[in-house]
Image (tube, rainbow, N blue to C red):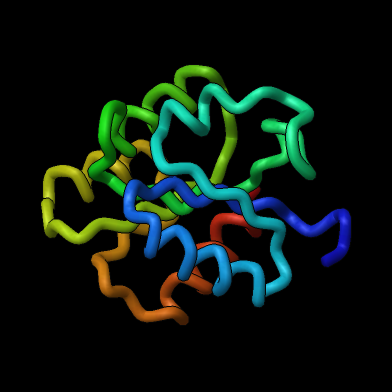
Length: 130
């Protein structure tokens, strides 16, 4: 994988979802790191692994997580001025959460199970805008 390939963070509390998305995003040529919770993502020490925290360009983020929700993480990142593309994924259709996420700048809000091409399009759109 090229060293300059964007890094995508996958944050989902379902390990099987994280594994499947990691394999898929990796095949697209991106660097990938996975996290089970929003707190794990926020607490990740700088300089650990192949990338620093600032190198994340896009998050694939579950809405419903243990602890801090995906929407709360988006709010915190926005408050900190972090310009990350966010693609929300969820198993629960919730128009209020969808509206809130998109109004706060999310690139997409996808319902599981989602079409792989829809995810590719959302990630590419998010990366192109940043």
